[in-house]
Length: 449
Image 1: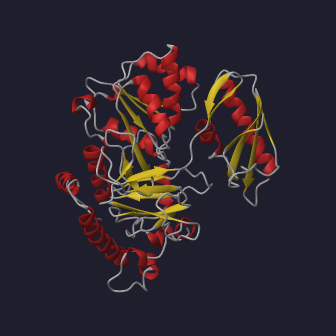
Image 2: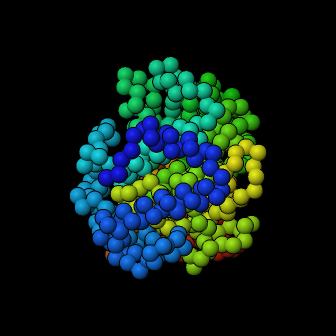
Image 3: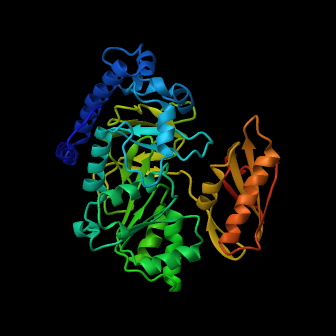
């Protein structure tokens, strides 16, 4: 396992602040060779996968990693022979208050599973300390240090409460770092209704909120209505796409700093704000390559990609090297007055908010229910009336679609009842999911009223 001290991680990240574009290219190549050479020696699968690399290889010589193929060879992909997929998945299901490390040395998370096939990701000491230093030195730039003193200040997380969720993992980590003051750090499940969340926040009175973007927008609306009254000083947007429009809307209402971080379970802290709404790429540690549907580079700087290839130069135990992710992005390299690093614009999934039964909801809360539905590969929520919804989806070959979708519909109807919208009725349909006419993509939420 590759390790590093916190002091050394801080020094390397701070050194990177002054790198020119040419120096970043040099450091990327050096770190890439160190990583690839290591995994060729320690990962049986990657040793075979990289057998045809030339001696003086560059990034473009390295073949693309596809999730499905590598997940099928998980035990040979990782570089630690002690690591086995079944034990990683068992670790992810541990009790929420269990703070132990996997094999006494690793942390582990799991991708959201929006494709029906969640991937467990193990992170080593080197990854965790470098990415921690990136957060402290770049994302938290300009934030008053004393604000994170939890003997005096309170933080509320509005997240998916599960050990497999990275945002909830951040909550547990923060609690571990502040023994004796855990009561000042709370997590509220996003499956609570908006009214319940507002009531809890008013009672708790947090100065810091960590939440998914659609919830931040809805909280801003509650602030304008006068129903939310908290001494907020800092907002951390978590996990999903925060559009520039949403950023300004939230900032205009609350008037406090908003920190936004484009991260993923596989690649870590890829890009982050620097006291501005733009996401600046941490190019000295993470490489992002915009590609088309054939995994070829997108050469038009104004065009959005069909996906990206991500290389995390810090994970030596479960390597992510030119790993394909279907996020649609573009990279802008012009000079920005806020920060000198290139900006990542994302045209990814935006969680929809909608009204049903006279109350506000988000598709994120519905997805929490749907993604753990056994036998379901993909899903769609269709609003069919002012108080009616229909679920559609694609099921596994051995599953009975009517039974799977019917069970999900019952769960969602129960959720609406618990949220104070007892009049909402949820049905299911085995008809194909509805695609958008523009582009032919299938949205997770569709309003056909």
